[in-house]
Length: 333
Ligand SMILES: Cc1cc2nc3c(=O)[nH]c(=O)nc-3n(C[C@H](O)[C@H](O)[C@H](O)COP(=O)(O)OP(=O)(O)OC[C@H]3O[C@@H](n4cnc5c(N)ncnc54)[C@H](O)[C@@H]3O)c2cc1C
Image (cartoon, rainbow, N blue to C red; front, side, top):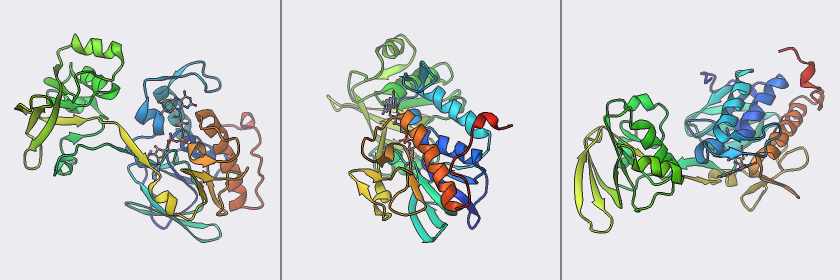
C-alpha cells in the first residue's frame, strides 16, 4: 500500500501514528474524499495491538463478541484498502510546523510532507524495540540481527538464536522450529513469562532451550557468524554458530518530540476540544494520545474520535464543506 508520493505534494491530511485510531481515521478520509498520508514508525500497522498483544482476545469492540488483536488489525487493513491511502512505514515523525493557514510541514526522520491539516493518533508515542545492549550490535541490524519477524520462511534451513522470555520469543521459537535447521532459545531467567500452554509446547519441542543465559558477544564482520553466550549464574561461556539472531525484549515508547511541537499537553496527553482539535487550529488528535474531561483510553473510543477529527478537519480545510458525512449505507462502493 506504500507509494512514492513524497515531498512537495500537498495532501489534505497527514495522520501520525498507524494504530487502530490512525488506521480508522485514514480509512475515514476516503469516506470524505480527503487525500491522506498515514505515517507509522513501526514496520507494521496496528499500534499496541500488533506490537504488544496480537494473540490476545478483545471483548469490548462493538459488533465483535470476541476478536484477537491481530484479527482486528487485519480487518482494519482490509477496510483501509478500500481507499488505498498513502502509507509510510518505518518513518518516525520528528516535527510538525504550521507555516500558514491550511499548510503544515511534517518532517520524519527520512522525508518532508505537506498537508492542509494534521491528525495525531500517536497513542503512547512511537514504539521502538528494546535493543540488545552490546556495543556495536546496531551494525548487524541491516543483516542478520532482527527485532521483528515478518517472514518466517526467510529463516528456512538456518541456525537461529532467539533471545527473550515473553510470548513473542516463545511463539517465534515454536513457529520456526519446523522451518529452521536449528532453533536455540535463550532467556536470562529460568522461568519464561510466556503463556503456560506455549511454554509446555516449547519444552516438548525440539527447540534447544538454554537458561539462565544472555548474549555477551557478537562475532562477525558484516553478519553475525558466532555468538558468545554466558550463564547468568555461573558466568560460564560457550560459543555457538548462528545464521540469524532474533531479539525480543519487548517495546519502549515515548512521546518524544511531540512534546516540543507547541501543542498543549497535560501529563503525557494532547489536550483537545469536542472537535478533537488541539490549541493549534487545523491540528487534530484522536485515540489514546488525547485528553479531555471524562476521557477513556479504549480502542472503541478512538474509533469514535477518529471520524470526529476527520469530519472537523474537512471543515477546517474547506469551510464550505458539510460537517456531517451522511450515512455510509447510502454510498455506492
Ligand atoms: C496488553 C494490552 C491489552 C489491551 N486490551 C484492550 C482491550 O481489551 N480493549 C481496549 O479497548 N483497549 C485495550 N488496550 C488499549 C488499546 O490497545 C489502546 O487503547 C489502543 O491501542 C489505542 O490506539 P491508538 O491508535 O490511539 O494508539 P496506539 O495503538 O498506541 O498506536 C499509536 C501508533 O502511533 C505510532 N507513533 C507514535 N508516535 C509516532 C511518531 N512520532 N511517528 C510515527 N509513528 C508514531 C506508534 O508506533 C503506534 O503504532 C490494551 C492495551 C494493552 C497494552
